[in-house]
Length: 348
Image (cartoon, rainbow, N blue to C red; front, side):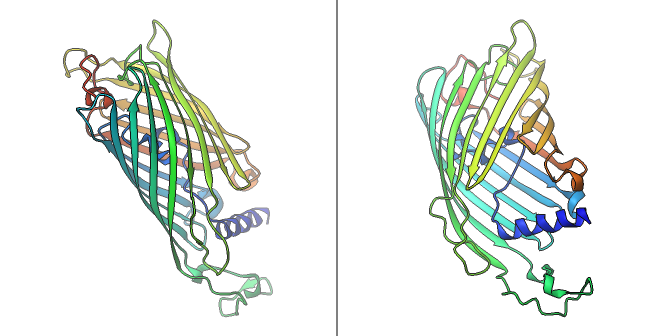
């Protein structure tokens, strides 16, 4: 009975409240954090992501699924002090018994300014569409239960919601980056630091399925991450944090990864490919512990994470939260080469 109540509450919450897409590997899917990151590190980069959450609670078939693809790049290869970045995201999520779904296509643009050999600042703008759908025929109401049995032929007594709602979305952000080296995978002197702030859902129109004043609440994001090399070793510490606010809701995620350099990048030739393996964990405050791994080889990367649920939903979830996987391919080299600096190797 308790599990049934959790499932019912979860589906009601999803139906009534418009939710943003959600990932645990935020640092590896950075364009979901801030449009100012687009084109900051790579000429052309493609990232695919998939997340499956709450299958243990929803019975598997109605698990909350999020998947999509992200692309970003930049122009201005011959400009030494400034550059224009651009990006495109296409994400979709499906959740709950009513198959509440969102299709989120968006485009981004950023202006990147090189302050000196180590510091860069950027600002970005994001414009997107939000297309929300659900299947009203899958909704079950209390008035349709007789003698504790559900009867779809009984009238619900409720206003039938629309099956689709389309709205627009605007976001913006700023970012600051410090790097001693562009060889992020394998350079022992590659200490770096990134931080930024972004805001989404400005002036977003109404997005309710039933006539009301419901809007997707403004979301504000603060984040920071870095890489700290331990001298005379092949170990790199990778701390990170993300703090988000959306209406009355708060999310705080902090973690640490340990990166081991397996192969250093060749200085004079491209025969020897850089590679590294990282493992660690994050903690989402009052919600989950998230162990994760990341393997990078040359232009390719794969990352995986799993949410171990520790929230009040634990009696129903049995600690099982969500599985997430990320694939990345850097089509072309990073900004060290793009900005005309002959003293560094490309960023992979």
